[in-house]
Length: 461
Image (cartoon, rainbow, N blue to C red; front, side, top):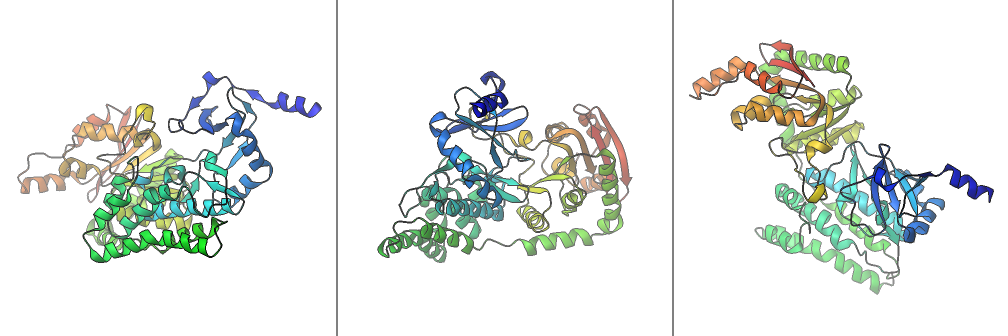
């Protein structure tokens, strides 16, 4: 009686009208995600409460967390109408989507899913959802976040979620391994992912590729049959292990030589040799003075614009359409354990909101908004090559910034001279660009300038 009174006393009742449900959490029959008091919680429906309570009490959840497979979770003290128990989750810094990941990130996410499925099978449990939208990146480390995808296991040798795993992980990775990364990334957001028929159609152009894909298709079925014939039909583990081996065996394209060439070209240019160090020092000094916690790097060129701030202790999101640059950043961030989230996102067309009330995807400029946005080597490209007006550029940059924008404008005289040679009338006007920025920022000031690389502006809301 005393223990019951203590639990009731420590519990905190929260009215339903005070919580905000997550837009992506609407179809789960076991529970629902919501925010309250600036924290992330998951309500578990009464009929599922005892199952998940046992997973916490017997140490299963804690084991999976310690293995790095599942997001940190613990039973909370909230009481919310309609739910048997409420669980608190660690809220990861930023939400990203699989179509924003480089190939190696998708591969690591797929391995996270299959390793979690294996760990659950060893405990007599299973994973019912195998799509990578249930994985988030804790900077460079993938972690599964959908607790209620854990279900009781059965004695079947086959993983019920395998088809879904293929459509959203295995088939996209096969395409990426054969140089079709753009197609894979474009199809990933589709409701059914990438179908086997679509993969076959894309790969039909190459007899060798078609042969390889055919072998990959049949490997899982043949492996399952052999397990059943050998008497392993009572366990899902051999099948899951084979799936993991198949993912690990995929050889993704290497962008190292491509990125190294671009990097060497940039570093060996006269402009960088004469002013690169000066610019880097100016950025370091500015970041030290402003002290932002989070930074979105939209810069183009050498990757120091993300690495240097991360080494200073900033949490950095880096967005670029250049897959080689993002892949290189991911590999460095992963090996050095830097707080960098590299994403394949084009500033010209960032991931939009999709579905009713953002239920399918939340716009990139909402998910990735940071204290400070850094944009070096971007503005002149957007204005001259992509023909964006200053107003559009300023609006886009402002939409990602909570407070500051640090933007570099290349040498205006050099660009205008190039425009004259090419008989183009449009020239870069720094006063006009500042006027556009002032529509979104309270102050816009020149904080540094150099005859080689141009002008550095600091904008503050």
